[in-house]
Length: 515
Image 1 (spheres, one colour):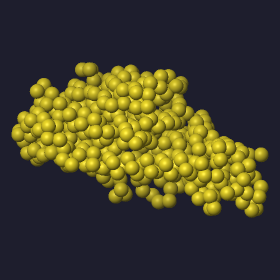
Image 2 (tube, one colour; image 1 turned 90 degrees about the horizontal axis):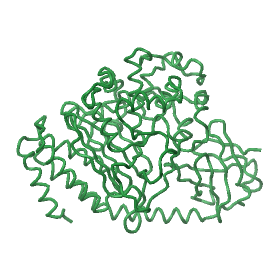
Image 3 (tube, helix red, strand yellow; image 1 turned 180 degrees about the vertical axis):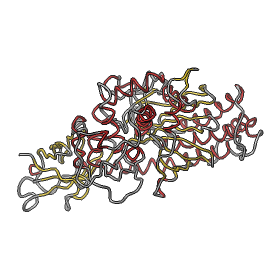
């Protein structure tokens, strides 16, 4: 189906002054109140159309250019099931966009000379044991921030990001269990930024959270950014959503204070995120005054390590050269670009900016095909600013493509949900009494299997969820909770089901039955 003519005509009219001024090869658009208003109207119309056509239940957009807020608006619902509209007061979960905050804090320490990026872990964390075989003299802060530490993060990530079963105070002790990665490469993970959080813990009473509060958020004027979900009324949070037969229904937001961490652990308003982009674009200046050393901003945006894997070199419409301190360093159609995205469950955060053209975009979504929409909207703003002749036609074609995909995506998700509900009610072939109980691991904490109707459920840190029976005969189970999925398999000393299970294997890691 074609895009509605009225929508497309209005967009072509409002963007004509931009498109007529230069070809796609132009490097910049002059900023004026009229040009800013034109760009803002064009983006607003595109997002309004997308949300009105159910592409996502909720969306937030903020655009900054040349030191001021060009546009800021929320659309749709923060929580569709409760009828809570998204607003400028809504807090959106940043997920991995938090790395830009933690990385910048580390850049501040670097340019102050108190913790250079060349600092080894022997000096940065002198009292913490590491696994045998890890060379802590060559393992530097720079390698942690650029994902070139060559260590696996599965030991810490399960508790830090999903379960909270091992308290944060015990994470340093887990470093002794972190193995070497299978190959030396730039492999994106949470691990380096979790360790950066441990380093920041030593520099402020209250740990990395307090450090970022005082050293980053207060100077930047980010008054509505926090890692403490317990301080916020639930009505202020944008939550993930699942497809309903018509529209959307809110899904559990399993994040708690215990699983808000230095690699993915803040919520913020659109306004605060716009300030974060603005202070990066203005090299430490905001509200007309310097609040950060320009050298720290430049340090955070400097490439530390290039990508080594092809899969990391492009995302959506954006090329990625490698990693700086908390930021992806790359290009958009040949122009330098700094960005950081994040995802959790069905939610997505997009922060990016083009330093040479002094424009940046914040785009947040909480379900449906909103993840793709964030990238489309950002690319559209940049294309309009550049004056591309085809900016409007290709942005609307991309959104229309999402609209056409929507029925298929909805059917597939509803079918998967129906199957999941069936699996949750499918009993194991062994007696449930042989499965229920507590299982523990020094690295993963305590997991409890409970009876849940005809089948079983799981309690693990902050997670409480049903267990799906994937293949009863083979004893294959799965849990979807905490923003991820876990596979489960039980082990016995003898015949399966003949006695209580001795262990449960979760994603390949063994938790032994507690006695």
